[in-house]
Image (cartoon, rainbow, N blue to C red; front, side, top):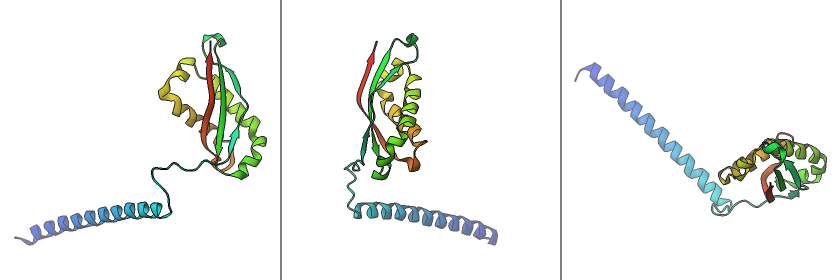
Length: 150
């Protein structure tokens, strides 16, 4: 075997060793995070505990399309991250309501009836509200009533 062939072989061997070391470190990092998470008493099957809840007054909104003849009644409760923001929600209430109304008015009845979009709808409301609140204060949005009237 010539010196050049040995040099190429050594390069490939070094590259293989480096790749294996990186993969082992990544695996160990994943195992460490899992053990650390479970060591805190977290149950992967159990969802996180909800924070303070803030119930908004009902929304009555004319939906897009159908010349405004279709009305949505929605009652929404917000799962807040902490009690600090819960004490200040009355300050943000008009901003939150305006954001939700503007968003819901842009939707058609067909968009709201689609069950596949239900979680997307809640996630978008949460995202829009959190733009106006400190520290992404809303963890979840819950509809306690949702009625489309023709």
